[in-house]
Each structure stands twice: as C-alpha cells, then as structure tokens.
Image 1 (cartoon, rainbow, N blue to C red):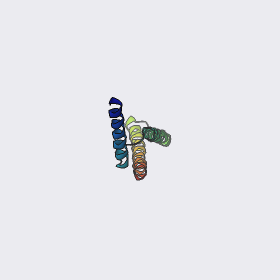
Image 2: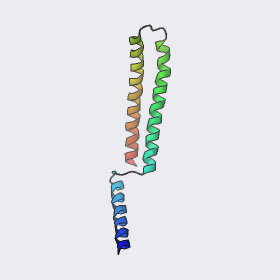
Image 3: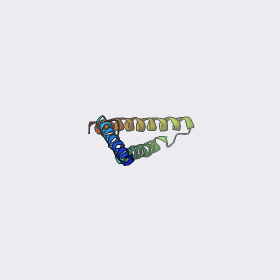
Image 4: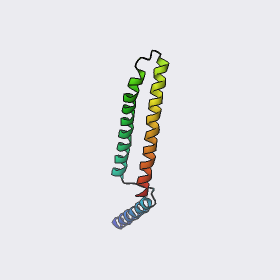
Length: 96
C-alpha cells in the first residue's frame, strides 16, 4: 500500500512539473545553469571591454574625478548593452 501511494505521488509530482514547464513556470536545471553562466560571462566580457575602451581616454587626465567620469560612462554603457542583450536572450528563451 505504501509503495502504491509513493508511486501515485511521484506520478502526480511529474504531472505537476510538466504543467509548470508547459506554462513557462519551470525550467530544466541544466539549461538554467547554462543560461546564468552565459549571462555572467557576457557581463564579465563587457566590463573588460569597457576597461580597454576607457584606458586611452584616461591617459593624460590628472584629476581623479575626470578619470571616474570616464570609467563611469564606460561601465554605464557596458551594463546598458548587457541589459539589452539579456532582455533579447530572455525573449528568445521564452519563445522556445
């Protein structure tokens, strides 16, 4: 009897998971981990690229505030671009 109850519960849990996936409320763990890794790798690359693009702009600047403004602008641009790419990627994944 106990075995039957566990089996029925397992079937009910599986059916609930299928409904959740179909409704877009649940995702595969491996896919989610891969998407998070990809997102943060993209962010890291954007920040490193911001450093490379800002480096020549700060040469010759003598005030810390000037350097800070250049870096702030470069990072702001990097994060804004990353946000656009992530929104696009999320839309792609939601459409699958």
